[in-house]
Length: 387
Image 1 (tube, helix red, strand yellow):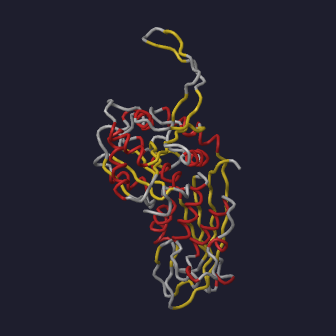
Image 2: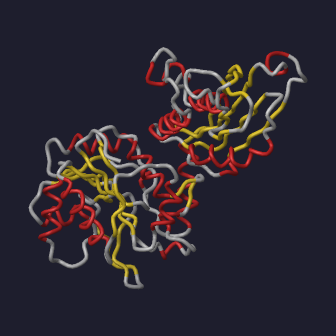
Image 3: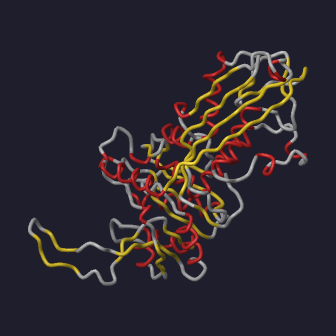
């Protein structure tokens, strides 16, 4: 999907990930219920200057990537090469052929957590330089090692280089085309060799790369230390009318009446949106999608859920669990529960095991008891960075 913005983002996800010892490449392994590559897509999607996200993968990884991304949209999935630099080159050539973008962020899928502040610093540095990379100071002692401890290395002037790395598109593509010095350690090395000016900006420990199996536990710990759990609640009710379709949890349910409302009146998804928005203190569904706006007349409520999901991603949050209770006398919800769980999970980009859907009645009391309408309650648990 191409949107406004002059910067392309290229995620390199073509590796085999063998050093982690898992059954699948590490970029598709999950942390906090979400694959590493999906974390990267969500982090880059939070940056309004990025107009398109491109992913380079190895041959045969198309299906596992699709499963990892769920409903997330990207501009293109590009076949990679034997080496990382080959994969990056393939992605750069693809982006350049589009003649849309003037800059690019190159990011490794093995660095799942993308602080928005680092992206802002990189983009600001591009206004004055050909490229920019995030770095962290080296705090450990460095020494030569050939089985016996050798002389120490002066740390003065040394830094640890991270990704994403930002470049003018023409500069980094020229650097790749000119490179003839074997295997490059990163893209900035090629740019420096080609004579381009590469600035450094402050990096972030959250950008640590996942290489070995223990790194997954360390990544989970970093995430837990910087996040707090938040809970939001939502409630909605719509009247039942003849001649309307009945949509509940994104599933069309056969019934002799449907819910009336400005959109498709999916009362469960409306309550869910309010719960998610409440968990991140972003108001309610009406403040984002006012009923007075004609563009939302008859709109599928799935769009509202995806919007709320993307707001969580924008702040770097993670949706852990949602619980929806439908309150009605009819129709029976049990026959449709599995389909509803699948649909809600797909819309939020979480597993079915993180979605609970229940139903109850009011013992024929009130408007739901009289069959005049259906109500829904929802609770969402979201992990987000401490305010």
